[in-house]
Length: 184
Image 1 (cartoon, one colour):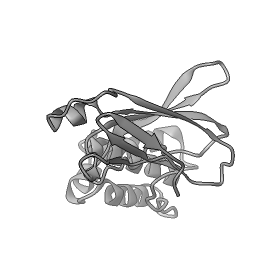
Image 2 (cartoon, helix red, strand yellow):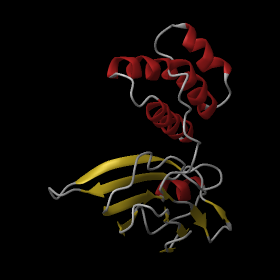
Image 3 (cartoon, helix red, strand yellow):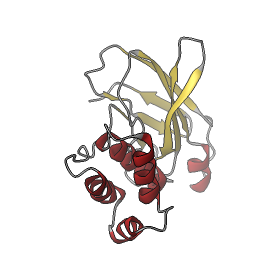
Image 4 (cartoon, helix red, strand yellow):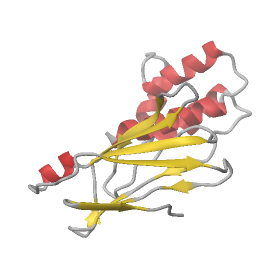
């Protein structure tokens, strides 16, 4: 769910904050973040209310000179608005993939939209010049609303032409139609 996506984004922030540490130290820090060690760091994992706060605390303990980067939406963002019902589309599965030079789609990130129809942390890393695709799976969303729908999946391909820009790819959806555009 969205809690897992939030934890994955926070874990990526920890990894960035621990740049320069060896792989073993970074693995221990990530294990503490995920609550897998039984160490005193696990108490930190349980006492902070959000993954972003845990990332900040654990990264600071592991590498006192470094600070976790500010939580941000990432270089590729999206949201889904249900135009038929006039609300954000929550709990819609989303997958982001990148087209590779060997002719394959490679997963980059995935998650579900939150109550605001957004999927934070969809692309946790640095942007590359490439063709990407976002696959939205709204069928279950409309089923939960008791509405029939025509599109079980919506696939949007787009090309990153400048790695210094932010790319927002929203989806406007109804049971029998959709639209997308490059937002800001």
